[in-house]
Image: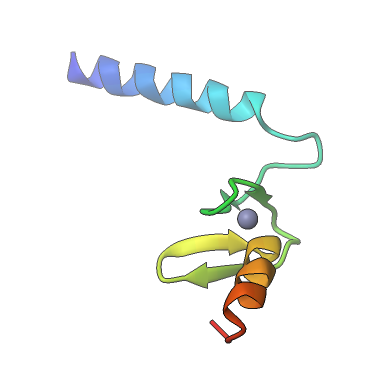
Amino acid sequence: MSDWIRTSGFEAAQKEYDRQEPPEGRPLAECWECGAGIFEDDTYYWVGCRRYCEDCIQSARRIMEAPL
Ligand SMILES: [Zn+2]
């Protein structure tokens, strides 16, 4: 029973993920801040255990005026 629930949940999540997949490829991750897909060729940043896209890092740097 628990196996069935786990499998069913996985398939539902996978279907949702595929539906949002842009045509150019599958994102490695999503930006913690804005939710933008982070792709293999993109520059992205780890801050703690969170990933941020370059746009969010740039705007954060502008606000704080300090290196992360
Ligand atoms: Zn972002």
